[in-house]
Structure formats: C-alpha cells, structure tokens
Length: 579
Image 1: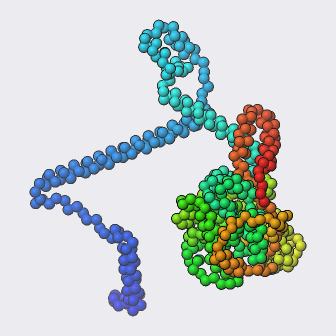
Image 2: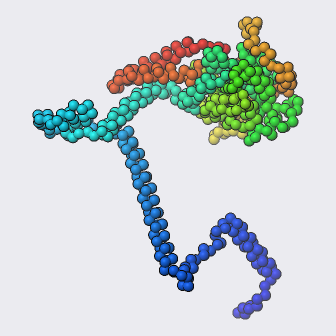
Image 3: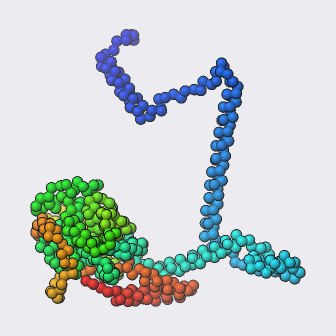
C-alpha cells in the first residue's frame, strides 16, 4: 500500500486556482455588501445600565414603564383599526343585503293574533298621550305581528322598494335590448364599440369646439367621410369645418391634387402627413428631407405650416380667449397623430388598432389655441356590410370572423396586374387562386399540406390597413362644374402657399408596382352612435309593453323587431345627408 503523502507542497496550478477563487469570493461579498448594506452589520447588544450609574433602579423602572405604555398603545391602535374594519364590512354587507333581498321579500301573511291585538287597542279608551300620538302624522305603521315599525326600518323598506323599482326598470330595459341582441352580436363590428360613452364624447367635442377638423384618409377621402357628422357640425351656424387629407404620402401627387380641388368646393381642405410616432417627436423634425422616395422614409411631418396658418386665420375672428379646435373623424384615420405632429410631442396615445382613443383629451397648442382629440365615430348602421366596415378600417381585424370576403373584395376592386407585381406572383383572374399563390410564396400551409388562403387573406388585409399595399381612388365628377369654393378669401398667405407647393413637389407620382387604383366607396350615411338616443327611447317604449306570458313575449318579439327597423329607417329618412 502506498504511503500517504504528508507534505504541504502543492502544484502551482492549485496555488493560483485557490488565489483566483479567493479573489472572486471577495468580489462577490463586496458586491453583495453594496446591494444589502444591513446584511453584514451585526446588531449591537444592549449593554444595560452599569452598576456604577446613579439612580440605576429608577432608570430600569422608567424603561419598563415606557415598554408597557408602548405595548398598550399598539394594542389600542389595533383594536381601533379592527373596529373600523368591522364597521366598514357591516355597512358593505348591509348595502349588499338590501340589493339581494329585493326579489326575496316575504309575502304578507294574515296574523289573527295581530288582528286581535289591534282590535283591543282600538277598543281601549285612549289617554291624552295616545290621542296625541294617534293624531300625529308621523305615527309609525303596525306590522302583522303587532309591533311598531321604527323609523330606520321604515327607511330601509322604502329604500328596498326604490331599489326594486330600479331593478325592474333595468330588467325591462335588458329585455328590450335582448330582442335585438342576436342581430347586434352576430355582427363583429359591434363588439369593440358597445358603449355609448364614445359618441357622447364626440358630441361634447362638437359642442365645445369652434373649428372642427374632419380627418380624411387620402387613399379614400370619400369613403372616410361621415355625412351625419358633417350635418351635425353644419347645424351650428358659427362653427367652421375643415377637411384634412392625412396620409397624403401614400397616394400619387396628381391624385392628391384632384382630391384637393374636389373637396375645396365644399370646405377648406389641406394636405397633411403626420410624423412617425416616437417617444419624442423632436428628433423626427431634425432629420434631413430629401427629394423623391427618400422623403417618405423620414419621420418628419408635412403640412403643419399650412394647417396652422389656416387655423390662425380662423382664430382671429373669435374672441381674445382663443379658439378651440376639435379633431373628429372615423377610427384609424390619424386624428391623434395630427395632434402630436402639431404639438411636436407625443401627447395623445396612438395605435394602429381602431378605437385606441376612448375619451376626449384637451391639448394646449399655444396661448390662444387648444386642440381636442375625440374618439373615432364608428358602429355604422346595418346598411354598411361587414366587408365595407373592414375595408374602411373602422374595426379590429381580430374581431372579424370572415376575413376571406374582404380580401376577395380587395381583389375585385383592384387591378390584378398591379397586385401581382406587388406580391411577386403570376397574374390570375380568380381571387382564391391569387390568395393561394400568396400563401404558397409565404409558406403558409394547413395541416393537410394545402395552402392556407385564410392566412393569405389576413396578410392582404394587414397590408391594406397598415399602408404597405398602397391604393388610391379617383374623385367622382360633379354634375355642376361651376360650384364655387367655400374657402375664405386670403385664408392662405403667399408664403404658406409656397410651402404647400414645396410639400406637393416632395410627393412621388406613384408606380404601378406600388400603387393600386380602386373604385371610390360611398361615405358613411348612418351611424348607430349619433342616433343612439332615439334608439334607446324606442327600446324603452317597447319594454313597457312586455307581458309575463311566454307566448305573448314571443309574439311581441317579432313586432318589436319590425318596429325597431321601421324606426331606424324613419330616422335615416329624416337625417339630412351631405355627400
């Protein structure tokens, strides 16, 4: 057996390895000390009162009294907190019992003993005190068991009765709305905008603002116009309406000029291109601007000078307090982006998803001008199909059940050669075959190995809504070519006109491989939101006629649905429509 080595000699490898480990250990401890400074400090023990100190017994007694007083204060505070929490729980449960016991109130039962007691009390001679009580109007009523009801119980009973009444009204309202529930739930575009608050916010913006900017998508200005909204704005005689053609960089220059001349016959119209939304837009304004396609890659906004000069000219006609400018329009047309571009700061939340703005927001532009951001007016009427609502980008694609129909509609409206050049596939005349070619090129297949046209439809709609697939529409021809423009004379200064001309020069003419020409769609004619008050009044009137019998409810369900449709059609006939 080999003798054990008793020498302390080690190899240099072990030596330097141990040194390295010790160094790493010290570094680790030092780093931990910086993060947790109290971890490596031992708590000093109380040395107590030295024996040589005078009045040692008195000092110890004072310390003991202080500790006892501290413990008593802590216990008293805990008791106070416990009582307060118990009282709060009791009040919360009492309110909850009032609401839950509304439909569980016991029915009044006939009590013979209570009747006998009441008869004896009536037959007995009354003393002056009881006569005074009987003549008092605040005399408490007698229950079935013969006891008097105190004031608190009487208040509780009245509160329960009032809650029951409100509960019944809410139930009747839900019954009336449930009759049209299936029709409204089946339509996917109703899901994101089920609340009426957004339309109330839009109406508030129209009432508060002096100048209204209706933001239109330059790719389809006529399709993004809202006739009920314009009619509501023009019903106020002192309010100014201005069209803003946002996303002007996504259309050819000659097409933008044609739309400007078309819309300026009705209201002042300015082109605009909002800045790319970053954490701070100041850096976007410092970028160099180049001619041609390089300009479109920068984050700089264009058209701010023209719009600001027009707003300042309008603001001079108002009081010294300044003018309030409201920004309205359909969802996802760039209302919040325009405000951020004018402010040169990200003050409003923006998103590519429709409906990101849910309430009005006041933004101070300067000392005499304020901007109000508003939610997008959406929920079109039943006259607009789900396909048209999807193509107008007023709904979220995640809530659309059928993506194939809007994609086929895009192929139907577009030039097949332009789409083939954009996606790099061969030209076909069938929409489903075109989607199949896109899915094969992107590598999207189902489990059985067949190309997924649903995935291709989703990609096509995504490119459509996010500006990757550039498309534009031609303005229609007016019947009367001599329509006079409503632009205020000298509204645009000469230098501002030069800036607008410079902005137009930066735009490209458009190429067939990146721009697709489409047929212009019709503007939105009827909105659920602007007619919501009349619709709810119709539903409330229908709820009052609801019976308890199941047969009568089924019979009335058909009648109320017909009445609801007739009421909606009558509202649409009465609305003034401006296209």
